[in-house]
Image 1 (cartoon, protein in one colour):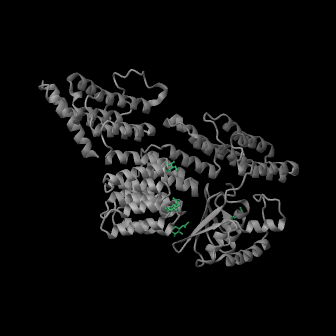
Image 2: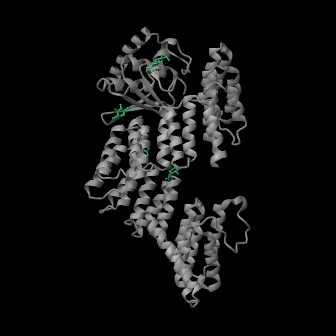
Amino acid sequence: MAASQGQFLHAISLFLQMRSSVAPRSSVPASLPAALKSSAALGLCTLATSLHALAIRSGAFADRFTANALLNMYIKLPALHHPFRTDGPSGERGVESAALESVQKVFDDMLERDAVSWNTLILGFAENKRHQKALSMVRVMWRDGFKPDSFTLSSVLPIFAEYADINRGMVVHGFAIKNGLDNDVFIGSSLIDMYANCTRMDYSMKVFNSFSDCDTILWNAMLAGCAQNGSVEEALGIFRRMLQSGVRPVPVTFSSLIPACGNLALLPLGKQLHAYLIRAVFNDNIFISSSLIDMYCKCGNVSIARRVFNGIQSPDIVSWTAMIMGYALHGPATEAFVLFERMELGNVKPNHITFLAVLTACSHAGLVDKGWKYFSSMPDKYGIVPSLEHCAALADTLGRAGELDEAYNFISKMKIKPTSSVWSTLLRACRVHKNTILAEEVAKKIFDLEPRSMGSHVILSNMYSASGRWNEAAHLRKSMRKKGIKKEPACSWIDVKNELHVFVAHDKSHPWYDRIIDALNVYSEQMIHQGYVPNMEDVFQDIEEEQKRDVLCGHSEKLAIVFGIISTPPGTTIRVMKNLRVCVDCHTVTKFISKIAAREIVVRDVNRFHHFKDGNCSCGDFW
Ligand SMILES: *[C@@H]1O[C@H](CO)[C@@H](O)[C@H](O)[C@H]1NC(C)=O
Ligand SMILES: *[C@@H]1O[C@H](CO)[C@@H](O)[C@H](O)[C@H]1NC(C)=O
Ligand SMILES: *[C@@H]1O[C@H](CO)[C@@H](O)[C@H](O)[C@H]1NC(C)=O
Ligand SMILES: *[C@@H]1O[C@H](CO)[C@@H](O)[C@H](O)[C@H]1NC(C)=O
């Protein structure tokens, strides 16, 4: 980075020297492209503007190398304004679109265009999400006699990847084959990305296998594709093949592998990768270390994350934030605050994610004053405007602490329009603090924004039942049925001996299903002995009590947890992931089981982590 920066500065200083030494006019065009490129790379807008004026005055603009460099400069510097643009200042159309107008103007003024000019323009539009414009320019380009080449195709393929438009993506693929461009690695990797994002990893694989000699770019594209496809095992298989064929990984190789392990909470695989990184001396790369921290936190082991963090010589904002977020989600929350202070002392400025982390810590620890303090320091001290997520975290803090009215006022007065999920936070707080009157008010807001919100209907209806307002509860249930609201199927998964076991609610297909239910029944007996009462709050069916109990038994996280216990040696920590929030009954049952079976159980639901130990949960029964 520093070296290239030095080069750019050098190019500019050379250019300025030539200009000042009354150089002959002819020397301007030759050095101008390099100066344009350098000012774009260094973000020197004032210089860029005067170079543009110079290009026009000196006639250098007629030279297509100079003009192409100008085009490129306008794309790189979106804040730059074309001196002769007639359509007025950027105004409400935003800086991006205004910048592209300038680019277009340079392009239109060019006397002579080549494929590079077209490709520069198309890439500019594609990268700025002006997709239709980019695609239509490809047609114009072709009409003007410039056949799309490998550069053009690899600019448009990401567009079809983004739209998951496999049909048009395949047309491009066909064009590439017909024109002998399909062995170009950039096109190959764009095709792999495109097919992977269209959930056709099998096609990605075909493209990949069509290359006899695979470049690092292709390997990395395949790894990213597998990770996106959710097949971490396959990604690791590819990774091993990559190593066997002597291709040396680069840091970006791990940028999809490590997060994939984190997202599926595959701790053993994550550890294997980590071991490889240490052997290959990649672990001193700060990007990799940060993603390891994030991965270990997502897998539920903050202490290993902390060890990785401690090994970083001078942590950057990403690594600080990953570590702070780890403590925010798992506790101890105080450690998150300590780190935040240490980070500030080290002159690293927090960003909006860091604030989300400390606010989350405040909410999980029920610290209202601290929450307010961080929240107001964002604009006051750091000039960061709180986003919806920050507001939601503060609202959650207030609600959790039982300050329901304050939470209500806060949400009502938010500068950003609250979404149904922000209100849902408060609704859950109303449930915990048993405030039915406010809950009704809040639910009304939610139903306005999201009429089919399953969770909110269930919470409100159960609150009605709990306070004896049976008619209203029944009415709500009827309206739900009328609206055809159905619960998203719950699913939980657990990794046992490197094999992923997925449990869907009431699915009896797992080979160990009968053994799981037998074990669950044994636990149930002991639990009832210790005072367990099934909690039907989240069961929403008009069925007999007896059957309800069966329904509860079939919940996916219970199946996964019990399977974990009976298939691992005593004392092994059980880690289960769930796609929804944990239900009240499962939460209670898991607390009992953690004590009866003497196991630590870590459950990651869609919202947070629960660490169950000795009959208690780290969330303090609020989630
Ligand atoms: C993948 O497709 C989805 C739509 O299905 C889109 O939102 C997303 O941006 C795409 N990702 C990439 C990297 O193109
Ligand atoms: C993964 O790829 C397979 C094979 O192409 C496909 O059937 C599956 O739907 C993909 N899954 C995802 C989540 O992309
Ligand atoms: C984290 O990993 C360490 C080392 O492997 C282990 O001693 C510890 O029990 C783990 N902690 C949790 C919460 O799994
Ligand atoms: C679990 O919670 C109970 C009640 O809140 C408390 O008395 C007990 O000490 C806790 N046990 C542990 C191991 O934290």
